[in-house]
Image (cartoon, rainbow, N blue to C red; front, side, top):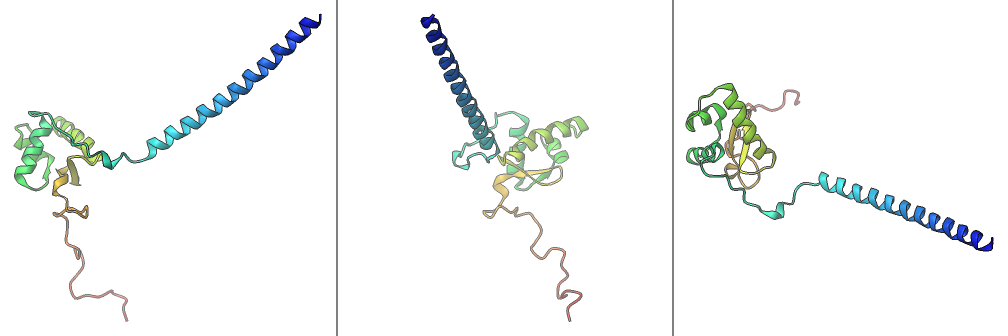
Length: 149
């Protein structure tokens, strides 16, 4: 009888130990998940300096070539004409979607205006587009604020 009680006590202690370890493991998994979720919220490392290479002969490579030749952003319809595609709605949607993926990642292409795409290299060092409006755009010259004085 004594052996049975001793064995039951050992079994109970081991079950408690396992429960404690499972609790610790659950907490560790929750912590790991929180770290991974936090990492996903951070911007990608700009230090990686991965050069994105477009496969030669693809529409995107052709668009890049057209934009480099032109030296300024072009509307998607003009880009389609220059790469030999008709400006049909399905072609515009397809090309715009492909270009937009690069725009979202801030790689190769920019979108300075709706349905207009340029190259990242067209932007000046301060991040603004050289083709943008001048600083005093929309302000009348020589006029001060209407309620002054």
